[in-house]
Length: 146
Image (cartoon, rainbow, N blue to C red; front, side):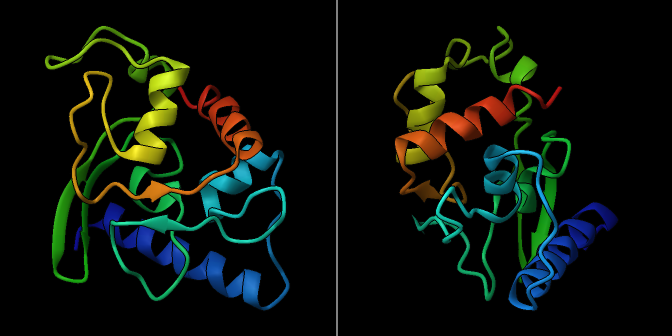
């Protein structure tokens, strides 16, 4: 396991422990909380299908990192690459198989696991069952990742 992967997995475990212990860190917005611990405005975990079945809640940060730039992940004898999900990258014209993401296609990627061309994302990407308000808040937070 490389250092970045170990840090992201360890960070997720530490956040889970803090939440359980009632010492959860404060977040500047609902979108930031969703990104870090996948708990929305209700403070309840946001459910998902597919992806990694972990022993603790998994948030975007576990795979995409605190900066949203993604990279190589090695956990539980499983290795995969996660993409850069910073707003500037997602909305740029750098993709070979499809055009830039928009707010609507980001919603589809998060909830249905498809890219702007309608093609499936990698199986590691969870399909989140997220409310409209929580999705709006998460997208606003993604816009801060540069």
